[in-house]
Every structure is written in C-alpha cells, then in structure tokens.
Image 1 (tube, rainbow, N blue to C red):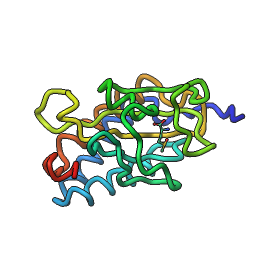
Image 2 (cartoon, helix red, strand yellow):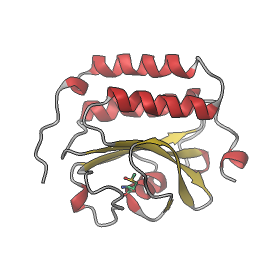
Image 3 (cartoon, protein in one colour):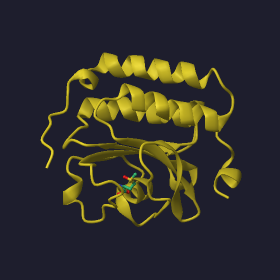
Length: 176
Ligand code: SME
C-alpha cells in the first residue's frame, strides 16, 4: 500500500495556465503530428509530479491502440468495452479514478499505479462524438486520489489543446 499524499505543486490554477502555454509553444514549434504529440507527453511527464505513466491510446476500429507514451511498457490494445480507457472513450467523458483497485473493469498494466485520469481527445471544431474521437489521454499515478478537480480541469484543457493544435492525420489514415 502507498499512502504518500499528493503534493501541492499542481493543485493551483496558475500551474495549469503556465503548463498549457508551455505545451502550446512546443506544439507550434513543429509541424509533424507524431513529434508534436510525443514531445507534449514528455513535457507533461516532466512537469507533473507523482505520475508514473502518461500516454495516449488512439482509436482504431473497435480498439484503442497504444500511441506515444512515457513510462514502462503497457498494454498494446484495449477493446472499447474494456478498462477505464474504454469507458472514457465510449462514454466520451473523463474518468477520474481515486483508487483503481475498486474498479471492476480496470486493466492493470502496472502494479505501482493507484489512481488514474483518462480524458478523451477530439478532432478540432467537431462535436464531441465517437466518430470525432482521436483517442484518450491516460495519466497514471503511484498515489491514491492524485487528481483533484483542479488537476482534472487543467488537464482537460490540455487534452483539448492536443486535439485542437496537433496536426492529426485524418481519421481514415489515423484509424487504419
Ligand atoms: N489502466 C488502463 C489501461 C492502460 S494502462 O493504465 C497504461 C485501463 O483500465 O483502461
């Protein structure tokens, strides 16, 4: 069991305003979508305390397939009806899980993960529907209840920034 409390650094809105600007500035410095995404995740991994894994799962047919990430090896493919990621993708909403041990459908990729935040990412200027879903941003923590409401709101804005500003391939290409 790990009872280390979440530390305060990311619990203020200013932290997320600055992080948003930083991610934005990295994205606009490079046109290639994979480089934009990979470095954005590396930056988030460096800046967010108490995070042991961060990455995206991209929607392909009926599965979420592992994309760029920071951390240990993870499951390659998550069917839409499985896991916290599948639930976030099918319900098109953020899943903020304080204790992953209490979630029946949870897919445990790493024994050191105790809480998890999963946020859907959508193509820019589209309705927030499955057909416009790019994938999900998955952030794992080695402490319980790591993600406060402020963390969630700040990271939802950053997930939408990724959706809006990255030069994503068209769905027909990305989902092949
Ligand atoms: N725990 C996730 C699977 C992905 S790993 O955490 C990297 C889930 O239940 O969907």
